[in-house]
Image (cartoon, rainbow, N blue to C red; front, side, top):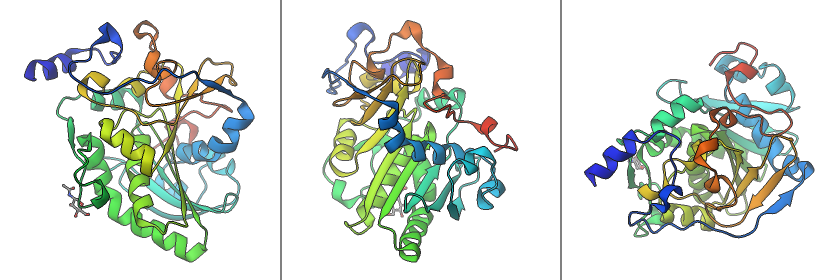
Length: 313
Ligand SMILES: *[C@@H]1O[C@H](CO)[C@@H](O)[C@H](O)[C@H]1NC(C)=O
């Protein structure tokens, strides 16, 4: 096991599961089902607002609080800021807002750039650890393990965030929660989404969306998400981030992938099953593009501080 961990740290960040057909005892499986084409209109309908909220999460806290973050804020129309947390440092920023167009409470998590996320994902000190069963009692005895770094990040804001969402639901009377994020923010969003889902009234619809999502846990976690808190996540062409941590270390994606095939801005496919070979999972190592992590995903939506007026965090 030790040599495996050493190997993993030495591997270039782009290495992913399908190489050499390496499996090393992992029992995760890649789906092979045929993809279905999606139009730009399909993608816009379900993903446009989550993408735009995830983009806002990269702007400075004052500009989010006052909803004056320039184009990223303006493009969303009427939105009422409710709460923010985190510190843009050790604890990545999140905010909660009332989306008056969609009549929902939105939680958006800030991400990080491809260099940072790849260094977190390739850091062997962040292995798989048990999901906190005190927080997710319904997961007890299921053998669920998640990425220790993502869980630590999630734990730092989970309680305050849940309180804010419950208050937002009560104050506004809406019946929908949308949780979103890019990169590290997408990974945390999958945990936040599952947590909120388990705590709100079943009449509240919770949707979880991610962009450039890395793998966040083992097969049991992927199955748990599919059953209890399905995720929709977009992977852009040859972005290496969705392929790490690798499957041969026991990591697995949930279902729900929407893959961007090329940069024509309207070539999208829906990928059935988990880690479908016809989508990001099947990418050639020789064609990895770190800049694909940032975007554009569609409608010129890219993620990072540069979209914000102050260009800052
Ligand atoms: C697990 O969750 C509980 C809240 O349900 C929290 O108090 C505790 O600190 C968490 N444990 C860890 C290790 O984060």
